[in-house]
Each structure stands twice: as C-alpha cells, then as structure tokens.
Image (cartoon, rainbow over the protein chains, first blue to last red):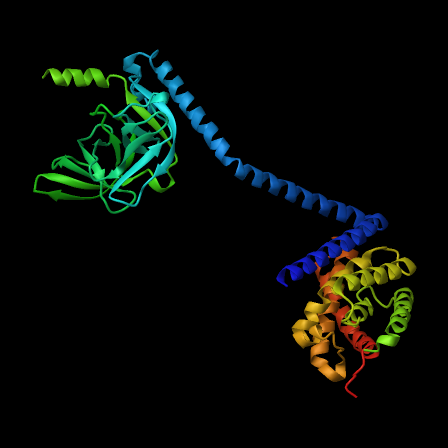
Length: 272
Length: 170
C-alpha cells in the first residue's frame, strides 16, 4: 500500500516536472525578457547542481586523497632526512623539523584497529616486518607520540597505545626545560600527567610539552600537549596535568619511527 | 458537482477567460483570472496527473488564443492542479478525498471554501506575476499586484465555484 502510494507520488512529481519544464520552455521562447531571465536561472541551477555533485564526489574520494597525502608526507619526511644530512650540525637546530635526528627511519602506516575505551588500550597497525617494522619502535603523529610497537607479524603490528597505564614517555617542559615521565591520566581521552618535575622549575599554563629524546624510541621535540593545572607532591616535585594535542578518537594515520642506533645503545648499556 | 455539465461549463469558462484576458485590461496591478478556481472545482474523481494535464492544456489554450506569452498561464496553473487534492484534504478532511465526494459553498461553508480558493489563487498569482515580471519589476509592484489581484479574484472565484459545484444534499 505504502509502495503504491510512493509510486503514485513519484508519477505525480514526474508529470509535474515535465509539464512545468515544457511550459517554462515555451515561455522562454516566446518572451524576450522571460527568455533571458529563465536562461540565466537555469544556468544558475545547473551550476549549483554540477558544483554540488562535484563536492559530493570529492567527499567520497577523501579516503584516496588521505592515502595519497600520507604517502606524500612520508616521502617528504624521508627527503627531509636526506637533506638534513647535508646541512652542517651547527645550523641544523632551526625549527622543529631540524631537530629530528637523521638516525631515525620513518614508515607511514594506517591503523587497522584501535581500542580507546579500556585501561589497557592498543592499536593494530597495517604494516609488519615485511615493511620494515621492528618491535620496540615508536608510533608517532604530527601531534604526538601515540604508542610503542610490542609485536610484529608479516603484515601487521601490535602497538601499546599511549592511553595505557603501563606506558610512560620521557617528556620535556618546553624545548629546554625539565624532563619527566609523561603518562596517561587514565580518565579523559586527552589528559596526561607529567611527573617528577623539580620544585624550582618555572613554567606557565599553556607551555608546550615535547618528547625529550632521552629514550631509544622517540625522536626529540615532538609536541605532545600543553601544560594545565599543577600541584606539588611529596613537597618536592610537581605533578602537572597536560592536555594532549592528539585526538585518539580520530586517529587513523600514524608513522612508525625506528631509532637506527637503538641496538648500539643497547649494546653499550649491556657492557655496564 | 454537476459532473454531467461540468465539461461544457468548464469549456465555456475557458472561453470566458480568453475574453477577460483580451478585454478586461483594467490596470497593470490587476490580473483577473478564473483559472485557479476552475481547476480546484475539477471533480475529485479525476486523478492528480490527469488534472495537471487538464490544467496545462487549459493554460496553454488561454495563452495561445489570448495573450502574447505562451506558457505563462500553463506554468502557473499546473502547480494549482498539483496541490488541489492535498489542499482540499487539509481544509475539508480526508473523507471527501477517499469517497471522491463533491464539495460546495453551501455544503462545506464559505470559510473552508474561501481558504481553498485563496490559497489556489495565491499560488497561481505568485507564479504568474513572478514570471511576468521576470526580475524586472520592483518588489512593491509584485506584492501590490498579487494583493490587488487576489482581492478581485476572490470574488470571481466564489462565483466560479458556485457555478461549477453543486450542493448534492438536497
């Protein structure tokens, strides 16, 4: 019954459109002013419709464009690494990108699965050992360090998310400030806590927190978040709330970063 | 409705409209037309698609045989045919549509019928005046023309409705 009704309304609409278009077409050919006016109107309508369909088409091709941009981003980063090696050491520390050491290798990847709502969150990344991913590598984005690779299969990797109670990142207050472990606050999606900041250190709300580079996993100077409220614990150190830049809910593309000197550092540590 | 005579009366009214168009050119602000009321009075046994085709043919006949702008009456009259049944359903209720019953001023009251013919005339005049002006007329002129024409056509439409419909209660 409802289907018949729908067909009836559809027929009505089609006949209505045909008759109206016919009448307007006759009017266009018989009235000079009306002709110009209707032609202009129809051109505007066509422009709107074609423009609209182009916008819709663009929307549905966003995924392909994102993939292409991620690939381009990766290639640019690799190119930057190559060019950096040609610049003298003393002139290299200009700007953020200049601070990323050439000892790191970057692999662009897409997240296949991510958990965000438990206390032990993880992510599965669509690149494995075939692509050069190794255990212990870091997972970063332009807005922060988001995890560490724990296990690698042929085409996928399992990474512990930063939103995990067992995970700490060595972070620095500002680019030259004090260093302390940064961990997820366990409550909010964009909240973290920076601990063990000495009492005498001066900082302000809104200051940026970066990776310190004091680990064999993450490169230095990746912005992580901004300083919020702080409190003194045990009368000696600050515990600072940090609002993370990365939105874990919208996370899709990441970069796996491997420290090329990691083995050498481990070997050196093992000698002691 | 006088379904037996409806066709003949309708045809005569189309001729009457042609006369009105050719000779009743009182003011640029006044547009006299019986067409919307005529389409509204088409028996409810006639389906909407058929009514739209009838309205198109009526409008085109008037356009061809009286006015210079072919298509203007047809373009303004087809939407009236399109909303005829929904408008009657809204004003007089679902029953009259389901039973394809007749309606008249005496049977349904002048208020409800007035509402139907005013809305139908407003739609017709809105489209007609808009197309006739083709973006060259100021808004005050368009609104004045619609307002004055609506007031005059209301009286004309009541007469047309009274002729084309009949109180079948007696």
